Length: 296
Image (cartoon, rainbow, N blue to C red; front, side, top):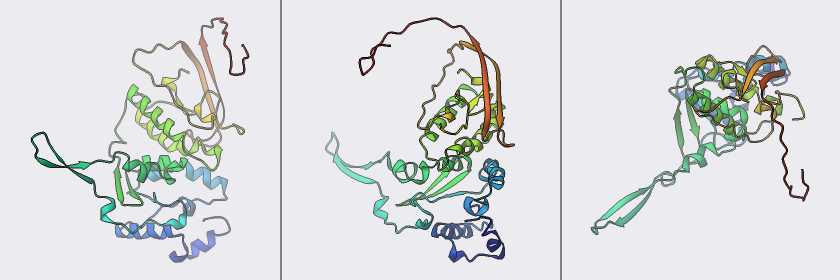
């Protein structure tokens, strides 16, 4: 791990054999692809420097989007887990079912396991981590080293332009938010920063303004402060953003929105923010009985 106390040792040169197994295996993969440079967060960001972390974390979009390939140690829970596993052909071959058809002709049918990808990739411990979520989606290609085989994932269309947060783009963003909200973060205050790379990508493609996890053109409506209460990032736990349809009516008018960021990164950590809206108020009384028999 790169810290103030170890940085001089790294500058003088550190034997590869002293690195965790996953890092050593990643070097093997990089060499096989004739790639000279390898980015590993814990070796490229000074871990006990807030200044270095703020600078480098704001560049995650550029780092991963401009990479040749992202190496995913999907089968490992710890740095010592490594990439490579003994593999058997029978574990990845499709199941075969022999059955007679209506005319009594025997045919072979291949059994497709539609949950295989989720078990091997999406539902692994690695992909439940908040930072990994955007690192996977930002990279143009991902090489997943799983328990039974190697998967190749390619995102070829991420740089194609989208009109100002169209309905399609907005619903895509909501799907990403819903998935991301289920991921775990070691530090809850990273909730905004760990998705800022994807936010930058959407912002550049659409020209829309990103406001603490919401978008100006689509505005309808924790122990440590990290986002305004009207942003989903202020909550801990899964969220389910509501989509919109072309016939939806907007019942409020957004008069002003302002966000103050903690750093120079306009899609990263938030210091404060407010929103001013204008709309009609209707007086109403609700009568209901709670679980404990209390009427309110």
